[in-house]
Image (cartoon, rainbow, N blue to C red; front, side, top):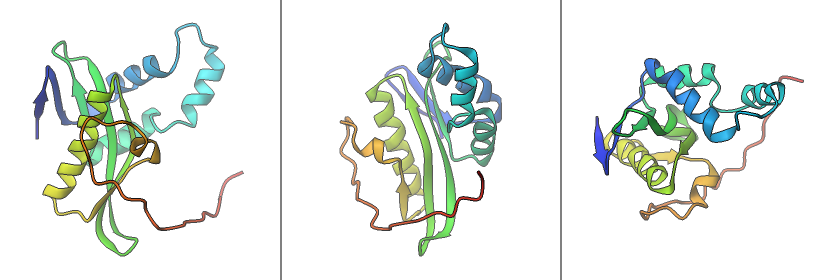
Amino acid sequence: MNITNEEVTYRIAQLSDVEAVYNFEMKQKFAADDDEMETMMAVWSSSFRKEALEHYFKLGWSFIGSNSKNEVVGFFMGQPLLFFDAQTQTLWIEYVSAKNLTITTELVDIAYRLAREKHFQRVLVPESIQGLNLEKVLPFQKWDRTTSLLKTTK
């Protein structure tokens, strides 16, 4: 599934995209003169660390946007959750990052359309996405589940 919009081409992310996406996100989040140790610590607890990108990209539910120079301009990391919260199929969007709101909007819309096309019951997105002034109206709803966690690490 390739989608082209205003010189940005969207396609399913591949394992071969990990390095380019990682470099894109590092440039988005950190300045070249930031403290290297602090940057490494921040990356380790981020959604976009290389191990996470590899995991998500090999599943085939993540998308990447590239410009006419084949440079990464945005991406989302997604995976299906089967039989989760009494739903047969849910698309979990772990992380979305883009150069601008137009690309963010398109990436979220791609996740939504992909889930509808594959007959998923819903898409779970970070709450921060709903707070953006996206350029398309999407049928966001609050998830009415209150979930607690049991932390298994220190």
